[in-house]
Amino acid sequence: MNDSDVVVCRLSHRPGRDDRMTTHVGLTARALGADRVVLPDNATGSAETVRDITDRFGGPFEVELSGETKALVRGWDGTVAHLTMYGLPVQDVETELREAVASEPLLVVVGGEKVPFEVYDRADYNVAVTNQPHSEIAGLAVFLDRVFDGAELEQPWANADRVVVPKETGKKVVEPDE
Image (cartoon, rainbow, N blue to C red; front, side, top):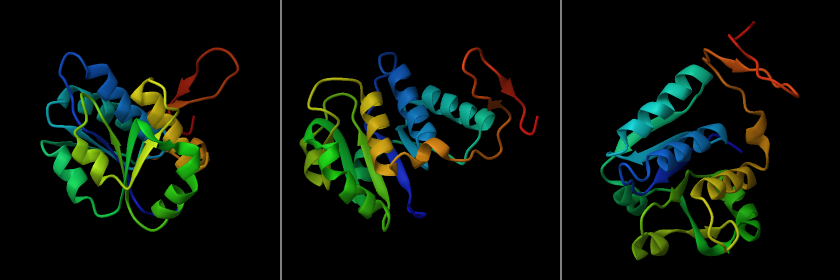
């Protein structure tokens, strides 16, 4: 993987209904290797939560709010991968996606309410993590793991106020360099 950006775009957000889901799109994007998440401008609470987690547990990771998520998809200069249960199996396109992201930015589109056909049409890849209904969060996690080939699980975190110490049982969170 090189320095090309991997950006996750949450296409829509229904306040009150999608708050937790949109927040988890951002947290999953951050934890599993994306450089940035773009959330709809009405998802301010989700954006604040993801920024807070980034401040506490480290980055780099950027959170952006946009009133033009569909325009972002239309005008993306790079590869667009739309996560949908109606797409091609991720295991059939993961090698092509890794090659694409090695040379140009990747936009990963995660829907919300009904996704307009123009998104399916614009996408370079409509990708399914199984062709069964399930959570967008699970799909995003598996997709990023396949694109990064597991390397995201070992990524370093800078500027963290807190560090989780892996343990077989129990919880341990410390300040960095403790």
